[in-house]
Amino acid sequence: MSLGRQKPSEYFLGAILRGYEKEYADKGEVACSGIWNQVVIECLRASGAFPTMFEWDKRKGNVNRIGTIADCIRAGLVPGLRLEMNEKGRERVVAH
Image (cartoon, rainbow, N blue to C red; front, top):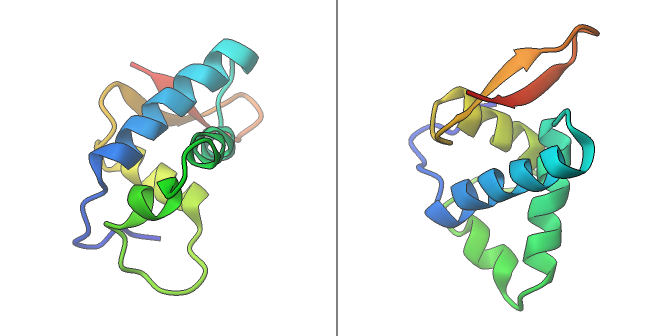
């Protein structure tokens, strides 16, 4: 998965940060899938939030948004977050 030349919106990057904070407060260890759950919850709370959140992304069809979150973190687009493997060999999101 790759973002290509597309630059994620500040709405999306901010939602990743807020999602991380919420997941960390609730569960401690954070996976990209947990952040995605929080992004969805945030979008469901406001009318028209999904199109606004993703208007920057011109990819068509089914898009793996969990992968998009991981790509954003890997690319250094989400300040203060990085990916690492936990002791079970699963990818997790950590603050640095």
